[in-house]
Structures are given as structure tokens and as C-alpha cells.
Image: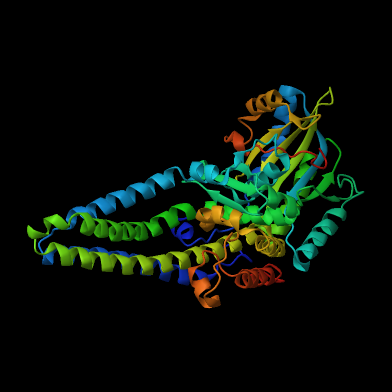
Length: 194
Length: 317
């Protein structure tokens, strides 16, 4: 934000960065090789819905678009829509575990639909779920506004497996832009699709 | 590519804010020029007083800016809370900060029933966001989010810094009035040595008093514009202008039912609150709006309704 914008109190809504999301499929291969965590095939987009009909129309449109392919090979399951306890909306897309490319394409479709309709600033994060042999849960969270990823490993009772998260950061450092500022690794407890 | 957006800036507000800041600057320059003019005309005798006022005023402004977070926390009796102690509150702040791409301020809770919130601190790293227990109790999730977005906008707009600089003039002018008065009171014995001292001090006192009054009104005006700007950015951040409107109504309604003793204690913090804790009453609506740090409820609701229409536009401009 520029000096004048600060001086006049004109915060500009931050536009999301979308492109870095496509680094995910190749990073997933690295992750599996290094830590044994494999994608579950489910991922989600989280955004803050704007009040009013215009936004809900756009949301319905996106849903229709993604559901068109469901049932076909590589199309995945119909999209699930949930609202979390903070009032944010999550669109969950579920595919087979080896269809990470298709999943990322789905997620990108949601992003570009919102951006094209002028609602880009409402995008919060995208989350792609992973699991290992021991059924430990892990998510890679993509922060739209910064274009960076961070790992989130929830344990039972709203605790985080920080050791695992740091291990993942080390493993993926060369494949993904990892968020350097640890204070921005906010927890997404109970995120759908995780 | 120029991003297509529903989030058009409010030109009118920018123009009014520019005009106010320009006037404040003008008064400051005129003030300094006048003082220098008086000094040179009468071969300087009060220069020391002006210098001391500048040093004291500037020093106290810098100190209060530097320690604003600690002073405000102590004054409100607020206690900083960790994410473990207040997970829901931290969760809302986390998400808003991620949406706005800003650093997360510290979060504190003040144990009073008065529903309110404020944010202060010299920069975004040292900011602290305070909410009262009364606010947490009365507002629902979306309303609380709206209030927090408003406060985070104050942090993003660096309102504490801007208002500190803006009030520097008033502080210096106010100090000059006092110094001139005391020096007249206790320095009377020296008058025989310098025949010009008495009128010079008197003139400085009058000029300072006038400047103080004008800058006081301008600062209040600026504060009202910045509240509107924070409402606006907050509503655009969450995309829920009506949740903020509903919070405003709830907080303003509850505020007037609280006994005045609590409010008097809260008055020094007024400028940074979400809604004013103290209402000036008596001299009719026009005078109290002139002195108020916050715009009237009607004005704030009107602006939010306008934003709501903007967000609902079928095709972005």
C-alpha cells in the first residue's frame, strides 16, 4: 500500500495470486518421496462470501461448472459446499488420489471464476489434503494474497504437529514457495476435506 | 491489467480528508510564521518559551506514539491473550489478516462490560487490538468480525501515527498558552529589564489559543473522516457491510445505557474506540457533531448502505 493510500485511509483490497498453485502436483511427488505423505485427492477453496445475490449467483455458477464433470473419468465427485464456524465458505472438490492435476484444475476454476467476477479479494486460502501410512493428517495451505504455501498438521484436540510441519517445510523448500513468516501459518481447525 | 473491481475508492472522502490535512498544515505554517514574525519584530524575548514548547510537545507526542500500545493497554486494563486462551477471537483476526495480507497485531481483552474495541501501536508489528468482554458477549460472529475488520483498517491506515502528527500542532499551541501564562505570572519581576516582554507574551498567548481552537476542530474533523475510511475498508474486507452496520447499532445502543462513571474513565481513549464512549450533550446537535471524534451513527450507516449497493452490482466496473 502506497504512502498516499495510507495517508488517506484508502486500503486497496488485495488481489489474489493464482499461478503458484500449479506448482503443487510436482511438489506432491517430492513430498511423497521425502515423507511418505500422499494426496488424498481432496482439496478445497476457502473464501469469505459477500452478502447479496450477485455473489451467491457467482457461487452457484462455479458449483455448476465443477459438477458438470463429476462422474466422468477424472471428473471426481460433486462439489461439497460448507460454511465453517468463522463464516467462511469452503468448496470441497474430491478426486481419486492420483488425480492431483485434475484437482488443481478444479480449484483453479473456482479461483478464476471469482476473480473474473471481481471477487478476487474474497479468496482466503486453498487447502490440499495429504495422508501417510499411519493415517496422520497433513494439509498444504496456499495463501492467495501472498502466493505462498505452508503445511498444517492437526492433531486431536486442536493441537498442531509442529515438528511434522517443519519437516515438510524442509522437504518442500525447493519445490514450493513456502511462507517464511511463521506467524502467518494460522491454523485451519476442522477444515472440510482434511 | 487494471483489475476490475467493485471496490472503488471513495473520491469524495479522499478530497475532504486532503482538504482537512491541508488546512491543518496551513494553520501550522501560519502559526510558525506568525510566531517568528512577532519575535523578529520585537527582537526576540519569548524564543526560549517557543523552543521549550516545541521540544516538550514534540517529545511527548513521540513518547506517547512509541508507548501507545502499552499506555492504552494499561489505561483500559486490558490483558493480552494467547491463541490458546481465545482461539475463536484469534481465528477471526488470523483470517482477516490473511485476507488483507497484513501483519497480525497482538490481541487483548479488556474486562469491562462496555461494548467496544480499539487498536493502537506505533507500527503494524507493535500494534495491539483490544476488545472488551462486553463486546464479545453482545455481538454475534459476523458483527464481531466487522468490528475487528474496522479496527484492523485503523492499523493498516496507520491512524495512530497520522493522528499523532495531526495533534502535534494542538499540543504545541496548548503548551504555549500555558507557558506564556505562567511566565507572565511568575516572571513579572523581569519586566523592568525588557519593556517589550509583556505584549509579546500576551500576543503569543492569544495567537496560540486561537490556533489551538482551530486545530482542535480540524483534528476532530480528520478523526471523523478516518473513522468513515476505516468503516469502509472494514466492510470491503469482510464483504459484509450490513454485519458492521448491525454491530454499530448494537454498540451505540448499549453505550447510552451504561452509567456515566465508567464512561468518564474511558474518555481519554475515545479517539481510538470503535464507537465513542462519551456523548457530548447539551449544546444542540450541531455543536456536538463538530466536537465529536466519531461521525454520527446515521452517517456511518448511510455509507455502509452505499457500500452494500456497490458490492451487489451485477457487473464490476
